[in-house]
Image (tube, rainbow, N blue to C red; front, side, top):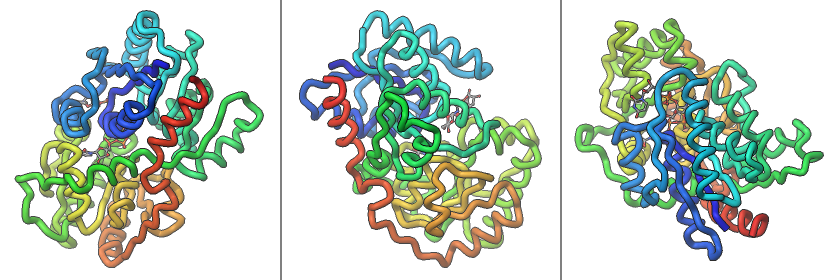
Length: 356
Ligand code: UD1
Ligand code: UDP
């Protein structure tokens, strides 16, 4: 049975890495990897293939930049062509990026069943491109792999119990990845020796593309760096561009985006995490670090409910106050929320049982 995997953005390389290994271990499953090119810098793309042992893409496009419609449209055209030539039995997509929606939509229109990893997540903010992508993708998927019980319950509320689509709790593949690679973590040389620091990441359009939110976050991180604890910020290209355009000045320790093994070392060694990333807010929890989440909503509500993470929006005062408070928090992960590293095997087994 042939699975076509469409990926294109940094977190998707990480998620697909462990699932791809599980597919390779499962007899009868064969994978074709399509990389849309949405992320293309070496430190946003190639490094993950190198570090995670993800096979070289069978098809590599160069589709990035432009408007959402333009990017997604170009992806649709090219993915449609490789579905035609490679004839997959199943299309597998991850998360909520434009590459996710393009892969799912191209397949669904050609009657190729779609498997969605990270199904059922909602922020209930339809201004986010990710929310639109994930709702549409879920609704044209045939098998919905949910990372949390909250996601399963959400799909049930949306009526998926009455649809032919199959909804399965499998746990979170990002926890599988963190557990698989934690021992190989290597601290980036430019910040080696730094202790008791805040690990920060910022890239959400809702923060970077709204000038007052971006200014508040930059101001807050500068204040934390000066008054609370040193801040290390691997700077996403979108954020770098928007900060330069806005004429803002970052006084924290910025570094270029790092590879996954380097990021894992930062997660292991930091005191806490301040982020607007979907993945990083969970990785903080996997490494039992408190999270200060610079968003108004989160799809990972269980971590706010259990007190591991706190939502602070783009409110400078709250970011600083909650960062200070989080320094004294203790976090425990007993593995029950996200499956404890079993998600990718569940996915491979389910694909085989469903489609083979
Ligand atoms: C995308 C996803 C977002 C995800 C994020 C992961 C969508 C709508 N957004 O956001 O859900 O959280 O990836 O990081 O799909 N750029 C570079 N080099 C790169 C990659 C991007 O310079 O290697 C630049 C692009 O040219 C563009 C900007 O960064 O100007 C944003 O890239 P884009 O892929 O559109 O969105 P992200 O913010 O990365
Ligand atoms: N990450 C990385 N290097 C970095 C920053 C993040 O390898 O410099 C990894 C991180 O470990 C996580 C993933 O990238 O697994 C998160 O991606 P991102 O924040 O870009 O996207 P999101 O999860 O918000 O969609």
